Image (cartoon, rainbow, N blue to C red; front, top):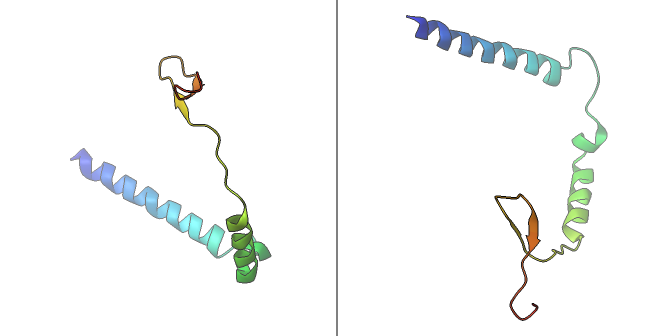
Length: 80
């Protein structure tokens, strides 16, 4: 008996949340506009090119000790 009330309350709360999100964010009932960086496709393509051009370097491999939560650098036997 109480299951139908719980399920209907959850569905109803999702409906209210969707309604509020849709009208505040998408319909912009409080005014405002979408910024040019989000709506301009050329800007997005240039930014994506910039991010893809950055060199990606990584440090030495790290292992986390789950007991002490400290990071230790893994060294090969030849470096010891």
